[in-house]
Length: 408
Image (cartoon, rainbow, N blue to C red; front, side, top):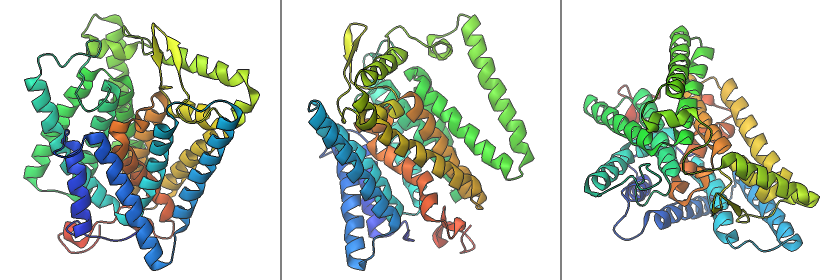
């Protein structure tokens, strides 16, 4: 991984593009197109560096081989069945996330990514605030808060969760000024309010999973206070859900205690139908039906998302694709747990928990509106795999971020 300063021209360009994508709609591009462009430029930039140095890192080759294998599985599925109508869109997003996160890991230090995310949160929060104030009725998604440009409330909540974890990790690691800390805390409070009104269980619980993983690592690193905080967090969570289940409270809270909802997201129904479709053709269990093939009818409408990344990968690429995703999550979790860098492992595991839980119960990590954020989250916890020789480089504070001029 390269050690580049936050003030370098490359980082300034990338951060500016990410800031623009957060402040949707940007002046020249929509947020979705801009996010695709950022990841594409990142991949091209890293590829150019590989060619100039005549040295392709092992993890880059591994990412290329993974995309190539997924392409082969998709071609086999297409030859066996039909060509999915949304194939190009889905396969492009999957490829961009894999290759983009690898390129980000090569170009940026994790501390820099945390700074970029925490600073772009201001643009994101400002856009949300302006939209809510100026909109006649922002609660258009079955009574849930929906912000134009950020897809469904589930996708928006995932982005909010990523920003909240990034802000808190950046405060803890990079030690910004008091003014920045105050501004960031206000942003976190506002984003929590947005998540509550978006009524997304996946986003809310993913944030909880991130906090749980963070405290678990702190506990394993010999921090006894973490045990008290961890139990308090769990008991508060269980108390909230129990109260919401037995007491007539606001829908934005009581909804977290139920499996189904009034606008019928139908997760369990969709998973049942997709598994039945895989079972009807044994070869599909091996190769899948190819990206973009999900189409389930229920509750009077069509669903084109599995509401689970794991189910999506199984349906798209069969058991081979599911094995790759599961192995990746297991290997990264093991690498995090054995990492000797306390702050690096705690931050990485919090993002791992956020990504894992979100992937388990939703497919928002593949949403076009969250593409750049998903790639950055992958980078923030998977970079541990590429730093086996020096755990301290997992989160490497530059000299500029340390008052003493040394790395933390």
